[in-house]
Structure formats: C-alpha cells, structure tokens
Image 1 (tube, rainbow, N blue to C red):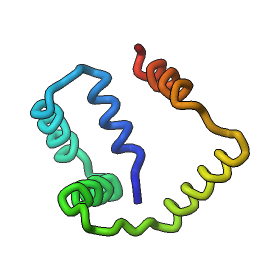
Image 2: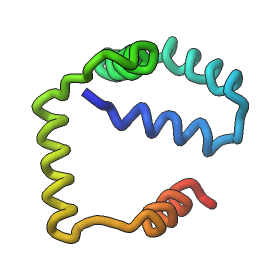
Image 3: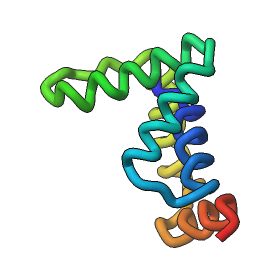
Image 4: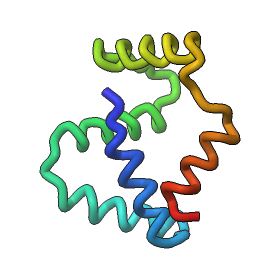
Length: 96
C-alpha cells in the first residue's frame, strides 16, 4: 500500500534545506531508525524493492485500487487541477 506519509516526510526534508543525495540518504536513515510505524516502514520497503527490481509487478491493495478509482471519478467529473495549478499549490505549501 502506498503511504503518502513517506511523500510528506520527503517534502519536509526538502523544505528544510535543499540537500545533496548523500545528505538526504543520511536524514532518511535517521528517520527510519527513529520510527516504529510498521506500516510506514513496509511502504518504504515496498518502494525500495520496486526500485531495485524493475521487473517486479506491484499488486495494489483494495484501498489503493479504490483510491485510483476515486481519482478517475474525480478527473471524469472535473474535480482536478492543471499541472500549473498543482505546482502553485505545492509551492504555497512549501513556502515558496
């Protein structure tokens, strides 16, 4: 299951400071060591497994499939943002 908390963690790390890949890896290692959230750790593990084995087929959970279907419904019903609008929203969230 994809966990958006991982994306939030990543965005928070970037928000604090623009960092090198090595610095980002170190910060992620610290964050991973400091969490006991098994669901988050499994999500990170799944993402890394997919990255290291591109031939592996990812199987979505029911919750993920439901989220995809919700997204399709929203797009089909005009409940979406253009790329430009989304960038503005992200920039505002990141304090740019």
